[in-house]
Length: 251
Ligand code: DGL
Image 1 (cartoon, rainbow, N blue to C red):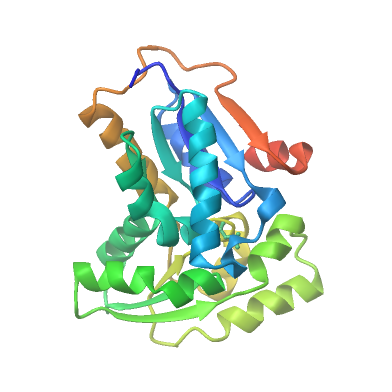
Image 2 (cartoon, helix red, strand yellow):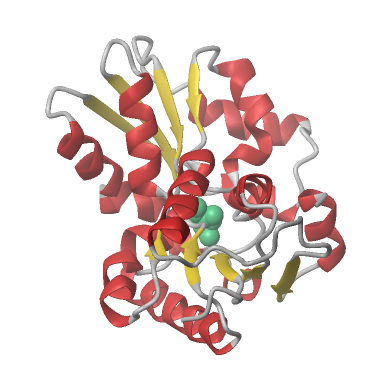
């Protein structure tokens, strides 16, 4: 695997851009190929088998385009496909859930953590397992937000209906929770509105994920030979509204 390849990153839609931003800021000399599978959105309402099948198709595409490592910037795909992708391919593949769990476990003071996520990620319990593996004393609650990612994907304007939808989920957070994990990569796009309802610690797994990506590039001698920031360093492959993606990305 050549160190001149791009870092491949994917999500079911625009949410993975929240991870891409951190990657670009931490790894300015790298090139990135971002695949947003908006044509198959939402993953959070699909079966594990279907999400895995879609994820394999995207990774095949990214590898065919010379990617040297893969970042799964989607919680549903991380939950259903990370292990299988790591076994199937020789390039490093990382996801967001272990990183989000690690960040949350490090931040919580009272060991009461809540996960906001899509229906698939909640039912899969990947965050519960990842947090319990770090500390069995952590108490974890989960809230499935089946329509939230869709509303964000279609365009968040903080309308009355959208605010009410968000409140219907955040009002379920137990009072004693001190740390909230944004367990869907779309949610950091409205972190400001979530923070108004939960004025405590909010974990966006993106930063830890970017740190892990950097470490893996170093460990595998895969860092780009470029010594200066790469201009136009992101190639977007998105079967959706490109204007919307580039506005959100603002890279
Ligand atoms: N961005 C995806 C995730 O992090 C969720 C959106 C979807 O349901 O496709 O799980």
